[in-house]
Image (cartoon, rainbow, N blue to C red):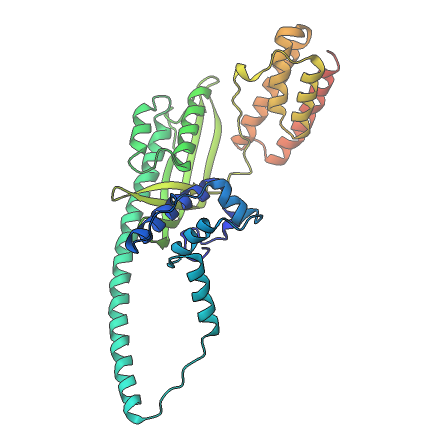
Length: 368
């Protein structure tokens, strides 16, 4: 599977979204094989994520008989027993002796020459077809990048952009969901890219096809993204992202159109994620000790944004004597987040300031 499927990696390393994408491909591939070979459907051609995980990730289960048959059919054999027999035959097959007559040699050379010509022709045609599909996919990815950027540029009026994205992204897959989440978050934060003199842009610099089959493909890109989110609440830039990175796209062919299902790239470790909180996330039924325990838990994991938010929500109801200090402390923290995200301070300085914030949170906890 590592060598035959688009991801080209060990299945034990696949993420949940990658496993689910494979299982869709697996079901179609096995169903087509069964139909072509008149194999009666004893069960639905379906393997759950949990079953896949137990077999190939946790490796605690070898699968039922019909699950093994499905995998055998995926690799081109009617059943698991047929697959084992073929495997054993290949291992045990002895090399055949060659005849030594000059006629046989001449005939062999002639056949070999014809085979070389035939294979060369087939390879040439295959190469041209793959190159054509690769160019088609490159055009799709270019348009997907442009449409993604235009979606960010549309905040806060994103309804039309969300529809446009469906032309190049599959709606229920990871890449589309990630973009939709970004649009939702920036709308709540009141961040935009359309302020005066905003120079945000996105550009495809390099493109390479890794793997292409009938309905799946993977490609690598090099891209330059310059995203300058402007906070309309404070009229200042809140997050600057200007980098050249490499990305991996996984695409699926749907109704004869290539669309993006997954887009992997490294997160920017020099930036701090700006959290969004919902009032419903705070549990008013918790006791003071339980609230303190939760706040300390956030602090121990370095999440002072959540720690301060919980302290502020508790103070609003039950500790008004510290509320003003908590609000000021939250303002300091958010200012530090903005400064690191706009290159005013480096990430090491931010972490140092974050330790001071943590100490002040702890002091406030001792006052209630």
